[in-house]
Amino acid sequence: MNSFDLLNLLDEIKMKRKVMIDSAIENGLTNERTIQYSQELDELIVAYQKARQTSWQPENGSAIFLTNWRKGRTTINRERLAVSSAI
Image 1 (cartoon, rainbow, N blue to C red):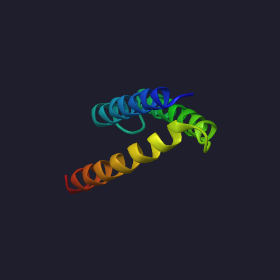
Image 2 (image 1 turned 30 degrees about the vertical axis):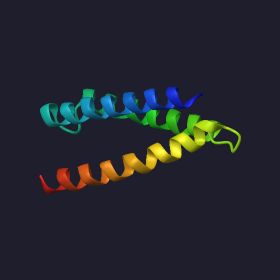
Image 3 (image 1 turned 180 degrees about the vertical axis):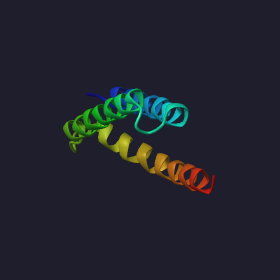
């Protein structure tokens, strides 16, 4: 899997997380649909982690790209987490 595929998988994870959160707000945490979205999100996360492990090789230029991309995303995610925690 190349870096473009990994980025697409991350986008899917973000979208599924939003759908799950919206469902939890609207229907509750124990709602069958919310649980289904949560399970689908778990599957996407596991797929991403496995794909990242297989693409993480020194001769693979995508590894350097993903490392730099992740550093930038971590900062943004920490800021978002701080804002959402404050709400």
